[in-house]
Amino acid sequence: MDIFGSSEPAKILVVDDHPFSRVMAVDLLSVNGYHVIEHDGISDVFPVVRTVSPDLILMDIKMPNYSGFDICQQLKKNQETQPIPIILMSVADDNESRLKSQHVMADAFMSKPLESIVLLPEVELLIQRKRLYEWLEQIQQVLFLISKAIEKRYSPEGKAGIRFDKLAQGFGEYLHLNPVEISDLILASHLHDIGTVAIPDAVMMKQGKLNEEERELIKKHVLIGEEICKPMQNRRGIAQIIRHHHERWDGSGYPDGLIGESIPKLAQIFQILDIYEALTSHRPYKQAYSTQEALKIIKEEGEKGWRNVKLVQQFVAFMEEKQPT
Image 1 (cartoon, rainbow, N blue to C red):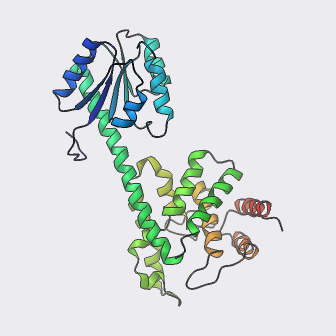
Image 2 (cartoon, rainbow, N blue to C red):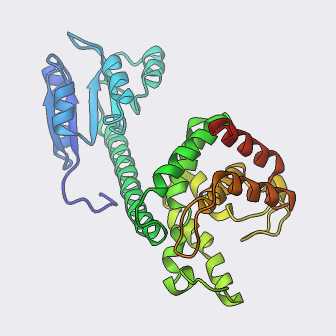
Image 3 (tube, one colour):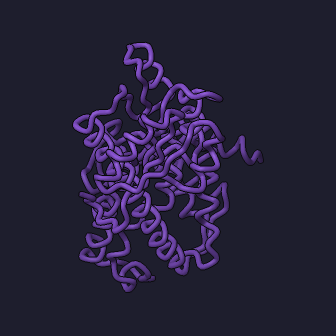
């Protein structure tokens, strides 16, 4: 049963140079509703993978012209084919083969002859996992489209997002963050204000002073944004940034009033990037500040106890190194 409601049967590519073994696998999978494509394990398998785009590959490890281990490793290193689950199979059920299958990033290893009681649950689990990731990717794309629409509220020319990306990348590298952390900062630069989609334009675009009720309404955007991004389970750091990027070092921020290092590190970094971007961008209600004016304001906020002073100093040093006066 497909929990994601796909109307088409999952496609499984069976790669095996032994006809009898291949037919057994094909029959077992076909009778259970899968669309099975056979490959003889002799000709090049990569064009077939690109053409078929299978939901899963079942592949023998020993074939005349190449090793299933090598093919698996190459497919897993390629960004386009990496998400495809791969089950390696072999007559020899030894510990060395199992360990090597893990080394080449195979999703499972099975011994031949295949048994339906072992194969079918594993196939179903891996296919559902792949479709879950695809579903999460679609959610991410929808969220990006929403964030683009929100961005145009403030920046009709649509250039702010690109500049923020570069700033997040550069400062993240300056701080020696790992690639996942830098990626989270960049993605958060697109999604951090997505919760404002639930805030009326009359409040978001108001040029005069906000009343107490309007201020409390705007504060809710971080909680709404966190809820919207929660389905991105493979990007949990982003939801954390969204929730906490308005906290202050002295505990006077929102939504949780966190103090000092209890504020997640990426949220601390992101809020400085966010403030700089807001200050140096033109808005319907204000002109853009220069780099030096913006850095002066950020340093003043650090002195007030709103920001991590050490992090502010690092950001100022990064900007001065990037744009020496």
